[in-house]
Amino acid sequence: MDQILSVKEKESSESASYRLLDLRSDIPSRIYWSAGGLFFIFIFILWLFLTSLKIVSPLFLPGPEAVWDEFLRQLHEGILLQDASASLYRIMLGWIISTIIAVPIGILMGNFKLFEGMLEPFIDLIRYMPAVAFVPLTILWAGVGNSQKILILFIGTFFQEVLMIMDNVKSVPRELIEVSSTFGLSRFEILRDVILRYAMPGIWDTFRITLGWAWTYLVVAELVAASSGLGYRIMKAQRFLQTESIILGILMIGLMGLITDMIFKFTYRKLFRWLDGKG
Image 1 (cartoon, one colour):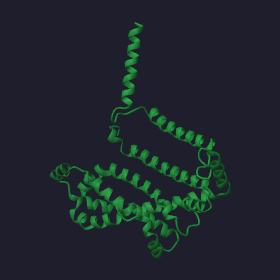
Image 2: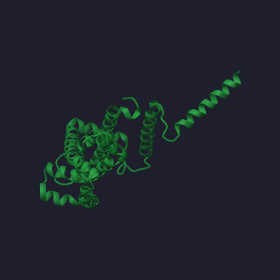
Image 3: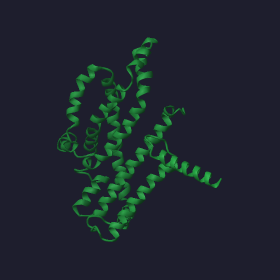
Image 4: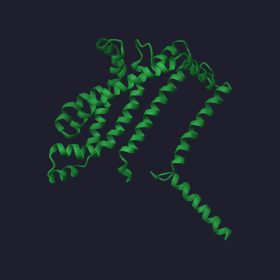
């Protein structure tokens, strides 16, 4: 009897481990989050190991304690909150303006070949141009204030976003549109009730991805004539070889970007529960 139970437990264990590595199979949420947490712990231990044993010079990679001390200093002096709020304002405003314009244009390009043929070549041309190359022009166009920084974030985000929204709209099966037309729905009703409802989960994912891209352009946006912001603080620290301040700025950008990403993932699950059969 004991042998039979032992064999069953072994088979159950092998089956569970197989499911963890099965293609696209669901796993318990505790395992999902534990895997992510353990990987963060592994990176932290590796960082601590390299710096504690002086394998890497503190000039190039300061230890966690040095970065923590810099965090406390900037927090106490109010620098960190000022920089984070300035960067968050620029990121959100640049991304929101980009999205407000990209959504209707992407929908038009995804549904009407005329707009796709007219706009896609120009958008393709601009999207391959690096955003940093526009810094001198944006200074001429918008000065050196927040407008210039928001314009850089817009340039870095908009042209990619509009094409992704176009592809989201194109993912709607043509058969679904034809059936809707057969049932007597008007063109506007098909667009509103069929195409947009079908494409909206993909469009929401596009919002999440493009907001992540906006964070990557932050240092470029704050490269010139900034007096606050996480990107500005990183560039200033570079001039004085303050590596702990550079790493703190990078970590803060990554953390704030991760928080916005998780917010989008959470709202995705709430808004589109019907995708999992829960709505």
